[in-house]
Length: 70
Image 1 (spheres, helix red, strand yellow):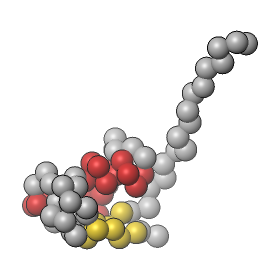
Image 2 (tube, helix red, strand yellow):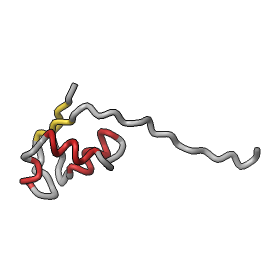
Image 3 (cartoon, helix red, strand yellow):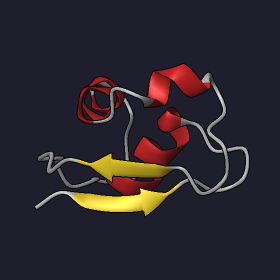
Image 4 (cartoon, one colour):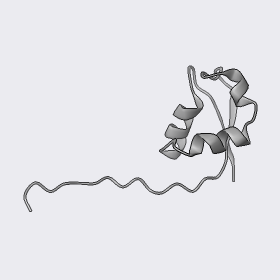
């Protein structure tokens, strides 16, 4: 189910994707497809702009750990 959020001050589509999905590569394009009017605002979205976030499968973030003493 798609989710709607509001842009924060000086927010960009890239920053929203990173904050909501944990990555932006390949996600920004899908968010712009779901919100065709966002590109007209330019790089920075006006504060309070509604942004529809489509359901996108994103892999879990896996942090690689290193054991110093194995």
